[in-house]
Amino acid sequence: MPELPEVEALAGFLAEHLTGRTVERVVPVAVSVLKTYDPPLGALEGRTVAGVQRYGKFLGVATDGGPHLVLHLARAGWLRWHEQVPAAPPRPGRGPLALRLYLAGGAGLDATEAGTQRRLAAYCVHDPHDVPGIARLGPDPLTEDFTEQVFAGLLRGERRQVKGVLRDQEVVAGIGNAYSDEILHAARMSPFKPAANLSEEEIRQLYEALRATLGEAVERSRGQAAGELKAEKKSGLRVHGRTGEPCPVCGDIVREVSFSDSSLQYCPTCQTGGKPLADRRLSRLLK
Image (cartoon, rainbow, N blue to C red; front, side, top):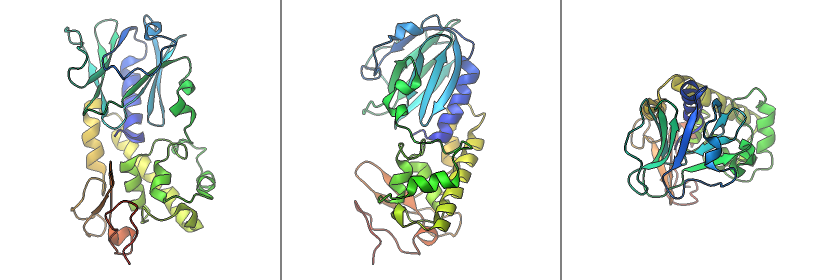
């Protein structure tokens, strides 16, 4: 799933390639992709792209004096740039193509989605905050306003495990499964530790790990072409997706806990005092 660093890089890529160009038309290809009807997609036609912005994991394409096209790539979505859009018209139900944006002059952009779940979403709205998912977002963790004190306030009273809190978009915007694993590894913290039990020092460690992990990932991704970002993300991960490999910090074997629709990875030596976590739903430390 594209998370904050990749979406930030995609926003930069799109800003470079779309700003100042004219939208010719936008074609929804997958039946489920378009989540709004007013304003219609036709309202984008003939508009000049004024800029591109990231909202958590959402991408917002603003047009001059007109509506915004907002995209959420979900778990398996991605973007593909064309200097020249394929001549053949897109065929609904065939392949991963979910939406195609045509620009005057022949260039364009495809939003694609692998698999069969079809969760990629497109919205045509007057204001990005008209999208419910954006309206509910918590603070962006890379802004100057996101201080350690703000973070501590968000954790205060939280009874959930810290892994789940980090992934909650209404608490902190933009962090998903992969980077929550990376942040917790950098903070040397168990993913199952209750957030409410964190000491001031642990909150400080977690805050510093969060800012450093996301900041470094954004810098690695900056300037990368859209097609290179997936490989860049994978190469920079130290524990997520690396079950069975040695931890780059201590050399212990990276372990995994599987759930019904996802999994997490962690290092026992770095994060759980050497104790492996039980690999079952609602795991607890083995006693």
